[in-house]
Image 1 (cartoon, each protein chain N blue to C red):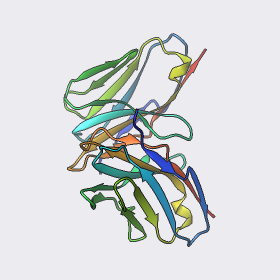
Image 2 (cartoon, helix red, strand yellow):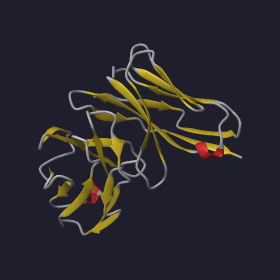
Image 3 (cartoon, rainbow over the protein chains, first blue to last red):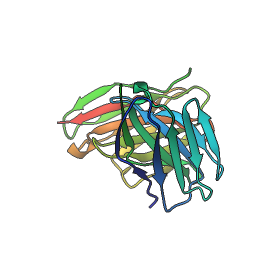
Image 4 (cartoon, one colour):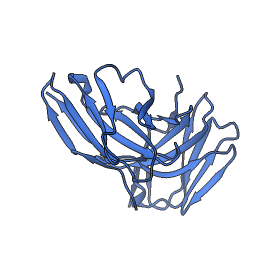
Length: 111
Length: 112
């Protein structure tokens, strides 16, 4: 069974601070996707990384896929209250690319 | 931007009743998925569907569950005889070529 562990589970910071959240597994994934989920809504795709060592930037968000494709990180620069939400990582694998989700990191950015 | 739509947003059903959850995937997508999220737990894979047949299913997806694509646009999940433990958010997802998967806003299923 493939498992994804996300850390920290909760993170509360002040506006303007930087932060990094992590997604780790003992299994290799073909791809890794990061989603953001608001209460009562579905996960919204932020990025997909597929190559070991790949780095992708989305404005103030930087995503990295580990060289061995077992882990990933999300770094947010100068966090804003609008970044508040649940960040989920999901590893894709198998012929159908079913997603294995982590429990998520609940981020709160205080003004 | 195209999106996955799910109906209803909230379904309340008596235990033992049948329920059908509906999804309209993004129009040019070929791969379809159902996931569920029990309150406070991870999002879990249920089933994937491609080329009008189930391509993979999890242990959760037992004989009480079925999926169907009755026409060119809808994708449905049926639970034949609901149990209390089926209460969860059910998410439909679709993809053009297996990844990335785009999710709907879900149906909250409450079994009484």
